[in-house]
Amino acid sequence: MTIRITGTGSALPEKTVTNFDLQELVETSDEWIQKRTGIAQRRISTGETVAMLAAQACKKALEMAEKTAAEVDLILVATCSPELLLPCCACQVQDLIGASNAVAFDLNAACSGFLFALNTAQVYLQSGVYKNALVVGSEVLSKLVDWNDRGTCILFGDGAGAAFVETTNEQNLCENGRSSGMECMVQGSDGTRGMVLSCAERAVNSAFFSEEKIESSYIQMDGQEVYKFATKQVPACIQQALEKVEMTVDDVDWFLLHQANVRIIESVAKHLKADIKKFPMNIHNVGNMSSATIPVLLDECCRSSKIKRGDRIVLSGFGAGLTYGASVLVW
Ligand code: COA
Image (cartoon, rainbow, N blue to C red; front, side, top):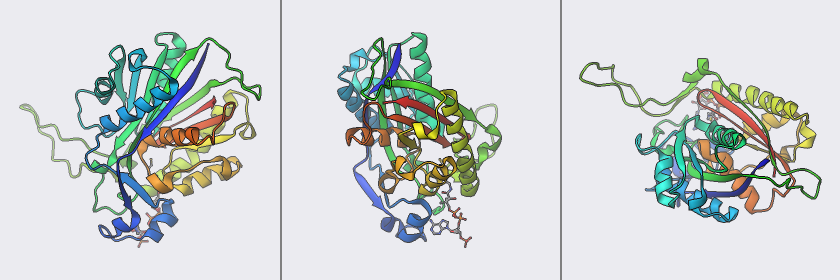
């Protein structure tokens, strides 16, 4: 039995916000943002919700996989910015796409969310509990960002990406002799450093207890600590994943990393001694969309035929938690 991604899809809000637009809001410049992050513009919601974007991405993934919504067994939505605490976003997606036979729930591992959801789906599929899953990363981070804070508001964007994953009994042998399918995964969390990237919910204010008022419910970040964490942890975790399948960096065709900062991606490539050309990027156009970055990039690479059947891919994410992970698969 193999587990394969057979469809991908993505959806972005209509509105583009450039660095020049941000210059009107905070003391910053296009030059500073591009030099420090590689971001030129991002999409920002003007009404599109996490659930709407997720549903659009799912429809496209199903279309590519040539499946109907009624055939979906499991919907896993990774998000840290849902509109509603109840019901979960995955149930809203189930309703929007009409996946009436699916089990649906959310998972929050911030920017590692899509990867953690993909790994969770893989375990469900391996165990035979379900035969397929829609795995989604969807965010409207623009509502969690303090638009007066130039340290964070320049980084983030909104969007969604989805992958349809299914089990097959065929071997799916590719022309280059590789067998298409998921190969292995590595995940990790370090809660001791969680507060370097945080966002508070509302305070407890019940009939029995009142917490002190929360100072800010916007994203708070120690950028340099996150940077250090990512540049150290990501290459280590990719190496660990490759060792698990007895592969080296040279056996990998593409590294699809969480798009947080071009400098982080360049540093990871350097640590791994891998050619930077193997690291597709779209951060220039869409910024950091947290859990949505990896599936949106995967969808773009897949639809533009950059990624071809038989290519070995490493997906790797990191983010709040702190969380990190890597997955190895053959397309
Ligand atoms: N425009 C102009 N100047 C800015 C600015 C902005 N948007 N944001 C910060 N600055 C200023 C700072 O105030 C500081 O000024 P000072 O030297 O007078 O004190 C200077 O630029 C350098 O700030 P610093 O925070 O040291 O910059 P940096 O090189 O660390 O870059 C980040 C900041 C946020 C781009 C970088 O730390 C980063 O990308 N970290 C990882 C964050 C991340 O990826 N988070 C999401 C993870 S999922």
